[in-house]
Amino acid sequence: MDIWEKLYEAARAQYHPEDVSPFVYAHHVVAALEAENGEIFTGFCIEGCSGVMNLCAERVAALNMYVNSGQTVIRRLIAFRDQPPRGDIEGSGMPCGACREFLMQLAYENRNMEIMTDYESRQTVRLGELMPGWWGTSRYETGADS
Image 1 (cartoon, helix red, strand yellow):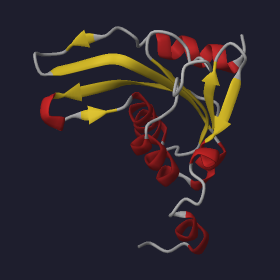
Image 2 (cartoon, rainbow, N blue to C red):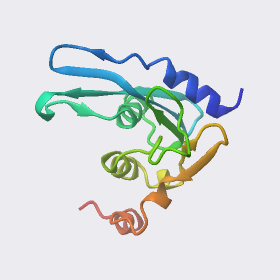
Image 3 (spheres, one colour):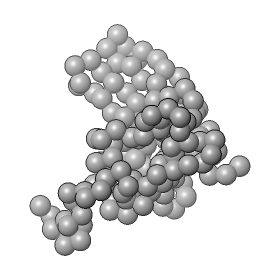
């Protein structure tokens, strides 16, 4: 079993769309990531009416990583709904803009993380490729706090 299959299986276990309440829906998008030390962390999307609680699966997985291990660097990430990412479906497996931004802000090394774009062929893209000319690079390079 390769690392992508391990990540897929870990995320798939979180997939069970459900109404948490008449206002909150969860587990309809899932994610798993491999942290720098090789640990796997998962997350699921949770959404509430009127935007009071909307978190994507990718951010929840990253937050689980940080809260449970203090790590911020991610090697690999997979995210999907009811099937693994497919290259023939535009945007399949791709993190949204808010997730991309959060992952870049969490650790500059995350620009090198691999994001699964086609599970069958194991095609990936690096986060940095999705964020060319990212506004925060100079802050990381200079160590400026604001």
